[in-house]
Amino acid sequence: MKKVLKAGVGSVDISPGESIELGGYPHYLRHNTGIHDPLYASCIYLESGGQRLIMIAMDILFYSKKYVSSVRKRIRERTGVNEENIMICCSHTHSGPWASGRLDLEALEMGLRPDEGYVEELGGKLVELASDCAANTFEAKIAIEKGRCGKEQGVGGNRRNPEGPCDPLVWTIGVQDMDGSWRGCLVRYALHPTVIHAESTVVTADYPCYIREYLARTKPGMVFAFAQGTSGDQSTRYFRKGQSFDEAERIGSLIGAEVDRVLNSMQLSSEVDISVKSRQIEVKLRTLPSREEAERSVEAAKKALDEVIARKGPYLEEQNASLVLLGAEDLLGYVLMKEKGERIDLLEDELPAEIQVISIGDARIVCVPGEIFVEFGLEIAEKSLKTKTFVIELANGCLPGYVCTEKAFYEGGYEADTSLLTPETGRIFVDTALSLLE
Image (cartoon, rainbow, N blue to C red; front, top):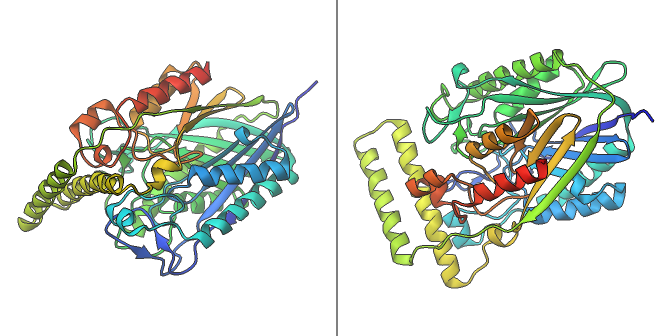
């Protein structure tokens, strides 16, 4: 019997109200003073051969696994779609509201948590969005292809080492109806949305906003979703020309143009197989230093930052020194919380970790929680038996810190010091993903 692909697409505004705290920059307790551009949750529903899939991508920093579990259950009750066949991921914009536990020292000490009203409203919107997409389907065609846009265009690359590993691939899922009209698009790109920095107090999706705007001009009416690739060590830091909305527009427009080119070259098909596998895995936690060791690390990092400021060192040097201090402070925060016997939400709410593999035709999408170094995403793609394999991070939950390479873990620095995970975590993720892919 011939398979008929059905799809449903939609999006909803998830912008927070005024005065709700924005996440992403420790030491900067920012509260929303306005909306530069709306934040969206976008959904693509697919059905083929009796298999059903829901993919939701949000313009938000983190979304806790405990909230994912609740939303999945409610969507299943409304639509009948299996919970493991629902993927919910984040763009990781640093200019959106909190929807997870915190890592920063101030938050741990002050007991800061997400706005309960916003989180409850967001969950309801996601359930309604997915339910509407599942209920309002059309016969569809789909394709998954890749483009390229990277540091050669001054867009982004490795933030620990500008010559280090990076992932410039612009993976694009395109959905049309049978009349050839573009109905939906999901773009995966590995780059921190941190062009707009801590001085800003307005809501923005950062550079993905401008991918959306570019495609709204070239493909009017098409629903756009943005998913983050393995960008734990990927940012615009050494490649951007500033930290303004003009720069975010330049970067987003370059990526948008490449997405548009990929869409225009696609050969779409209405006959595709869909399947989903997932596995819960336990991860080991690092041994924390003593309080005295952690305090010495903070003092050393403060001294190094003060020296850079005193001699008026270059901006990037000051920023890197500041990040080392933030990592040391986060580690001290964990030590103090453990000492007091207090709950660390990002630890208690996110484990075990879920690895999910989505198959759409000849493409494989590996979905992992947390912030993952690009090396692991590249390895999964390289070792997969399917050439169309890519990884989405911050999917179906967060983690208590970065998944670093062993080299980065022992070198130290912000990503390593702010993580409660061991350097073996990345290897566990890769091995589990490859097992599911086989």
